[in-house]
Length: 54
Image (cartoon, rainbow, N blue to C red; front, top):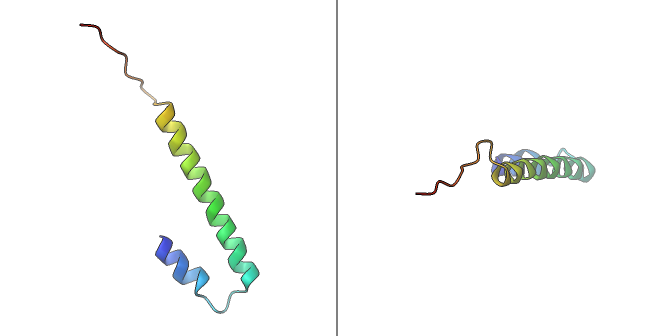
């Protein structure tokens, strides 16, 4: 995905610097949200495991 974004967006000579910057910022926002969701799921598992005393 990163390579595709690089080739399609950043190497595209028909896009202005402003367009490229907007797309980079949009991609960064998407990445931050996905990392945030993953970290939340790791910190708060859906089915917590209870400790069992033997």
